[in-house]
Length: 213
Image (tube, rainbow, N blue to C red; front, side, top):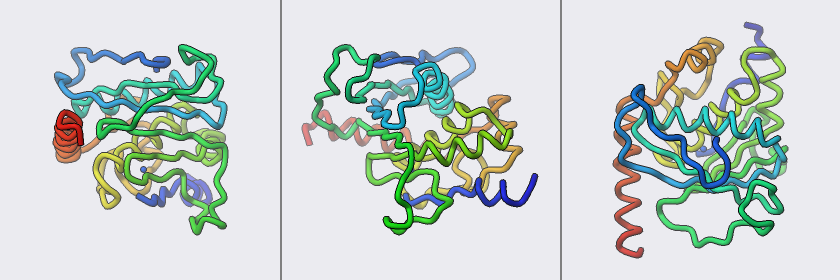
């Protein structure tokens, strides 16, 4: 693997389909799913519907292996996938995450380094599509797979907290070519400890929602 590719692939992070409203149901390969969380998607990068659907399926499988079911809500303004032409009108709850996919980001003006693929701030995740496209063009993996890994990583930060990198698995700070191969063979995953912590945190979020906080 060449050095420029390795440098470009370094994920320096500030924190981290079905179509609208649909759920990827659990199957026998995954743990029994008891917890779910809704991800409200704003596709400002105008990623084609079929590409976004493949990406969301990739992301959902990462979380199913952790015992978590994702629900997707398409909130992109004027989206053809939405139930109506108006963007989602909703009041955020502790069980919601917001995913914004932007074409590019003014990293220098925002004080972020050029290698940033995305960031998570609280329950909000921002993904820079331009960066993931660059890696896909290198030929290491398809664009939906690169984008899916990046989104799953950042959603992981949103559920685990900013200091949640690990030496192995999808939360590694630097993903190598072998990690893409693992993703293709369905063996790239959150660690058992991370999966347990995310389930615990989601349970707490759901409790707060039930209490109306």
